[in-house]
Every structure is written in structure tokens, then in C-alpha cells.
Length: 154
Length: 154
Image: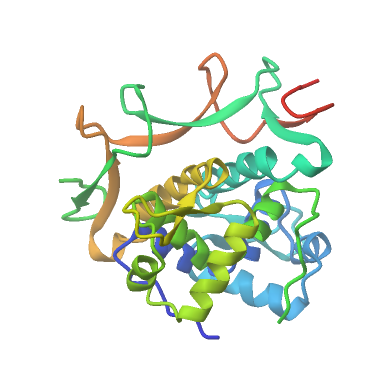
């Protein structure tokens, strides 16, 4: 079934889902966040058909989540590098990781958490205001900022 | 194309993607987080075919993201209520919302943010340790907790 495009939806959640495109694409972003940069590395990690992987990578390059850069080894090969926009998907990945680790390993008698190696403490995602006050998602309200030109916020 | 099931994947991100099932399903969770509880409300909001919506809701009930409860109005009708597990998907929704608001409205000259109405301050997602120290996703390490029985952590 062809999915209705949410590219122009008013809801930023719907637009995000459209932008990423496919669930699997987030696993490519995960691999990139873990240091993978080459087509062959993604292919080996994910086991997707090459044409499917190529299409998803191309879409994410088109959308500015990845950019193509020359490999550092001077081989002339192109590699996939997360852009700033792509890098900020890490928070989505961390949210999925913490949720999955908490709820989806129970049948095996396990819970998976993330730990700060410096202190050994477990970490959690929190919503904080600019001055550091902790808030819950429930009562937040949207705000629209209009920009006259790049970099200028009004 | 039939997707490989990630239900038993070692990676909690992959399992989470499998558990939620379809991108669109997150929009059902979004609607529920905003107060919708009835099939007709989800149908009106999302514009999905009824059989598709019913299948996705059923899957999420089976997976323990929603539970069926009698309507509060005593009509005997069943409503969909997020479980604790479903409620914790809010952090995934917030992460998608903040990312989309920041990156996907630029062509329209806009940025969408979330604001704490009490203070008027914008909010952001942060990773914090148990004692409140802020950390970045990059260097975190996984930890497995095994549970001998429910409620007992070792």
C-alpha cells in the first residue's frame, strides 16, 4: 500500500516520520553513529539487499541526513557522513534504545540500560528548560519562530 | 517486501522498531497521548483505512502498548488506553517532534519548538545521569541487568 506522504504535514512528528522514510533507515543512522561510513559496512551490518540499501542511503543524502565525502585514506572512494541534521537523530535513537532496553528484554529476564563510563551511573532522557528546570512532556505547548533570513531569529 | 523480523534482535533500537511495527503507529500513540481514546477518534484524525487502523491497534494491544478498558461514560464501549509501556513512548515522540521542528520547517522559514507554559522557556531533551550530570550519547556503554524474579534486580 502506498503511504500518504506526510512531508507537508503540520505535525513535526509526522514530518519526521516521512523524512526518515522507513524504520530500517534509522538502523543505518545508528550504524553511522557507531562509526560506520562505507556502503559495504552498512551492507554487512544490516543484511539488506544492496539495491534497497542504496535507495535508502540516496534518500537520506537527498534529505540532508547524510552527505558524501571523500574517504580519509585518499583512495578516492566516497563515504557517507552524518550531517548536523543527521547527527541530531541520535536523540531519537537514544529514546528508542532506552525504551526498548527497558521493555523488550523482560521475557529473557533482562533489562538493558546505558551507563556513563566515567561515573558508572545509568543515564536517562529528561526534558529540561533552558535554565535547567525539569519538565514532563504532558503540558508543553508549541511555539513557532519565524526567521526573516538564515541565522536571524525573530 | 516482507521485512526481516527484528523481534529477537540483540539491539534494543532494532527491537523497538519491530515492536512499534509501522511508522504510522507512532501517530496513533501521539493521538492517544493527546487524549484520544476511541477507534472513531483515531480514524478521524489519521484518515487510515479502518481495516489498517484496526490491525495496527490490535498489534499494539497484543504488544502491551495499549490496553482495552470500558469507557468512563458507562456506555459499555471499549476504549484504547496507553499502558505504562505505551506512555513511555512519549520520549520517542518528543525526540521526533523536536528534531522535526528544528529541521523540517526551514523551507517555510519557520522553526517549531516546545515551550514550558509556566516559564515560557523552550525545552530540550538532555541525557542525564542518576545524579543529574549531563552527558552526551557518544561515549555511553550498555549495561545488562538480570532479574532473578519480577521486581528483584541483581
